[in-house]
Image (cartoon, rainbow, N blue to C red):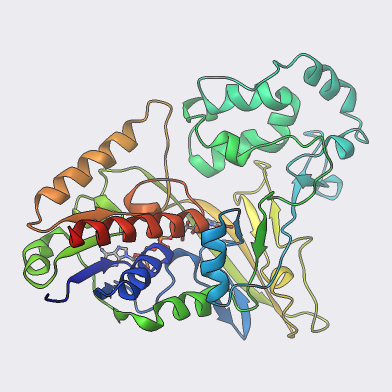
Length: 379
Ligand SMILES: Cc1cc2nc3c(=O)[nH]c(=O)nc-3n(C[C@H](O)[C@H](O)[C@H](O)COP(=O)(O)OP(=O)(O)OC[C@H]3O[C@@H](n4cnc5c(N)ncnc54)[C@H](O)[C@@H]3O)c2cc1C
């Protein structure tokens, strides 16, 4: 039987893993990537030799055993325990020297030590047994009370999403927001957590080592006929408004990491309190600072500190509004794109499926789509 040919659009985690698995299953795969590098959003770079993350902090964490075995096989094995700090001002009159560094998620054991604890305690005592609400603000207030919401969440959310939390969906709240009673300090509770010493690039390059990759190859719906002539199926991991050449059809929030190299006194020197420090206050425009050197443990003179500035026109975060309108539009775009092709089209990953997913979920998505493609083409 003739070898089946598959095109994969995008060389982030999703496209790379799907491409690798289909190549291992005996298909001929070509991954088509619009930029000059692989790794997509998770990619790390260096500035004066210091590893940093131009697209934001990326900590790999998973409880999915299949995903864990897969990344282990490609060299992602260096354990890391991610802890985040938040800088808060307990009173609007506090000056900048009076800010406090508290754990994120907020820890009841730390909050008990604060002067605001009596009012926080009263609010916690009157919360419902389970958080509930029709929008993000109501849900989170019902989880931690108004005082903690105002301190940790309110302004951060407005900065991040460019709209009040009352307009946002509750759907991502359970995954992103928590009040800790058990003293667990790590951000994640997953079974496995890693940070590779040079960022994930080498891992993704290992995944792609058995796959043909063409860089500087931007594919859009205009290429549908050409792809149908050369391939038996196509997997799209690109954002669908971009792929369909209809910018503005989907709503996205983007961040820009404003990254600066700074000298340090010694090889282990760092300049911020943690790898990720949340800055929820409206006093600063950024939402967090990221200093990847905390996680890499790199021994090098100098460091790179990045300020995460929200609200730039890039496709980073899907905007999940309370009415679900954007997700419905994404599903319609998928149908419209698929109708332009004479070959089967599959959509996978964070951008194409318009979901707020982590790297391990993107890999799980890739595994699922590879299995589906293999089964469909075998039939
Ligand atoms: C600020 C931020 C922080 C994050 N932090 C974490 C974290 O700590 N831990 C975690 O697990 N996850 C994190 N994530 C999520 C993580 O980035 C994603 O889950 C993962 O990168 C998704 O991979 P992907 O392949 O689906 O998409 P991407 O990585 O976006 O890859 C898509 C690829 O397709 C290419 N492409 C796009 N359009 C086209 C086209 N038309 N033609 C050809 N190529 C195209 C792009 O150049 C890119 O290489 C974070 C995300 C953000 C936004």
